[in-house]
Amino acid sequence: MTEETPSPNPADAPVDPLYTHPASPFLQTEVPTPVAFPPPPNPTPPAAIYSTWVLYRTQIEFGLAILAYLMVLVGSIVVVQANPDAGWRYYVVVLPVAPAAFVIWLFMRALARLDELQKRVQMQAFGFSLGTTALVTFGYGFLEGAGLPHLNWTYVLPLMAVLWALGTAIISWRYR
Amino acid sequence: MKNRLRVLRAELDWSQADLAERLGVSRQTVNAIETGKYDPSLPLAFSLARTFKRRIEEIFESEASRA
Image (cartoon, rainbow over all chains, first blue to last red; front, side, top):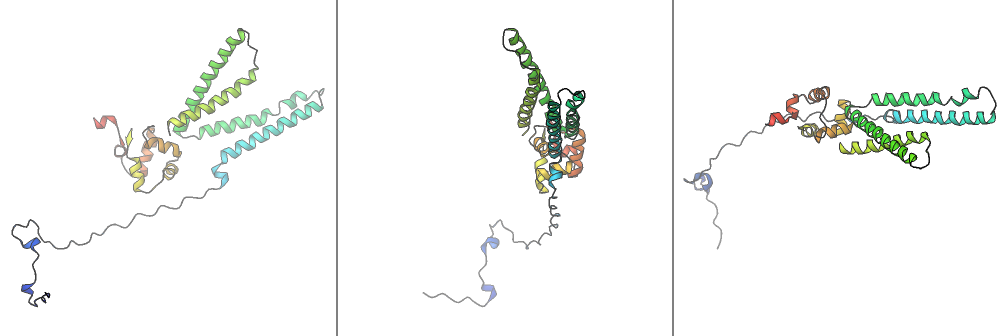
């Protein structure tokens, strides 16, 4: 069976029943004009490249200040041990207080630069550290009364520092 | 407090770090606000509204407004 050639008469062209059937619910409409979308927003500018000093300024300042403290501390100890009977040895042994005071000043400045959430985290961490240190030291005081050996009071500050770091980690994790 | 911060940020293709830099806060703060674990202070809320050019009520949804 061969295919019949299509009739050249347009009136005989096959009619799409999709739109012409009486029961068809479809309406043939014009092709809509393309919508002119607004141009894309300006691309995000590339991230600024900061130097190491800008990104880690606080850590570098702290590191240099602590390094200065250690150098002055070691130097004062060496000098005083070499001159155990010198009258000026009292002035030399307190020299490390100067860089230590600078470390504290840097610490206070870093606290002031924290944003509101970081200040809240640090406040709660300090509270946790202070309360837990009080608890531990009071508890050990009672144990000392019961016979345990006496501990030097210089252990208190490292204990407080460790608890402060632990508190910061725990409270920061809650806001992750 | 529920908010549309993540959606608004995505519309502008900003990362949390980008938004934090514009607001002058840490990335942790932006993340805590987006996840609803931290409600910003009033100055920070106004700063967010200015950054996104929206009203505060369009960004944050309080419990009272949903009632």
